[in-house]
Length: 136
Image (cartoon, rainbow, N blue to C red; front, side, top):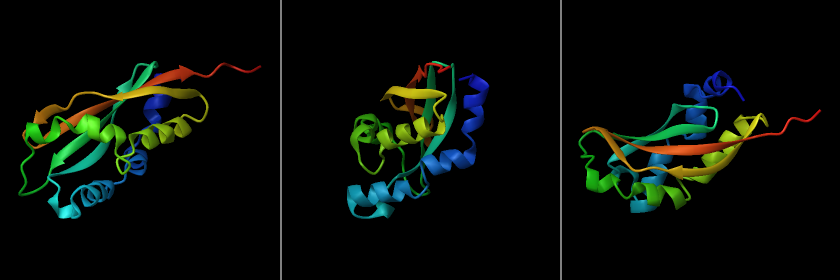
């Protein structure tokens, strides 16, 4: 699948469908029993592709009146990898469906938390692509 074709798939609307805004509140409700206890909102962003892998990002936006500190976010890749509400495996499955058989999602991994600003951290999600064999 060409990189331009893949790039065109990841519109803001598609990203919101892959990771709805309300998932942040659902995560904190499951974690703390109260969504208002969360320090950040999570947003899915598309970083790009080189044709061999797709890079998405889980953006952690500090909520008003809260503090997004490194010690709060550094362990999140391990938590997000297996948390059923965040459901990274489900996001990858949805990306696979989005590729419509032109390529397939292979292995995926979450990278280390990166601090982009005091109020925004991110966790990269890298998805390897397996090309589908052509059928003639």
